[in-house]
Amino acid sequence: MARTRAGESAAAAARLDVLEGSAAVPAIVDRLAERGGRVRTVATVRTLETDPPQAEIEVEVDGLTEDELVDALDDLPDIQAIRRTRSLGSIFGKRVIVIGAGAQVAQVALGAVSEADRHNLRGERISVDTIPLIGEANIAAAVRAVADLPRARLLVLAGSIMGGDISNAADELRAVGVPIIALNMVGSITDHVDLVVSDPVQAGTMAVMSIADTATFDLVRQRGRRY
Image (cartoon, rainbow, N blue to C red; front, side):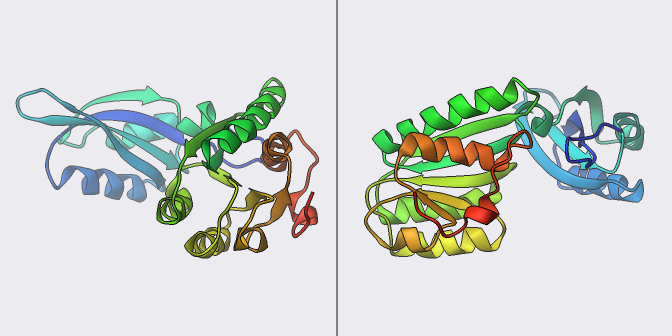
């Protein structure tokens, strides 16, 4: 079974063409559990224009090899085709999420992408996702949604003023294990994050360094500091 850098098992993945219906996905999950697999994700990729209707779905599973995954699903009646694929984690890897105002987001992304390139050349897989947003409600909702994003390892809040419900959302996100770096800005948010960095390019650089296995930067030792 393939291994990640940290020594954990890499997920096995497959794309399936399945007959549309309420029983197909539960049958797949049950069969994989019977074989000792733990389903990491099940996602519908697209609806297929077939008769009868089918959907293409992708499954990622821990605890099974690719051969074991295919063998487990081979005789399920609702599955019409099985294709091996690579898990998204093996392609896009860990994710840094950047949320905030457009200009600051762009500068954070500049630092993050440049630093990610340096580590990815040494075998890492780190990707950077950004969304410029305005408004307390929109930003707070986006911060909470980071907890549901696959492979999201760290959030950077890049703006000029944040507080209120955004600070509440930041506390909730950190409680589920996703650390946050924020730019030094007006508002209460700087009291509800792990690290505050004034320079946006440096914030992006430090965000990537904190999740890279090929870096020595330890965010835990920096927690509560301001730069």
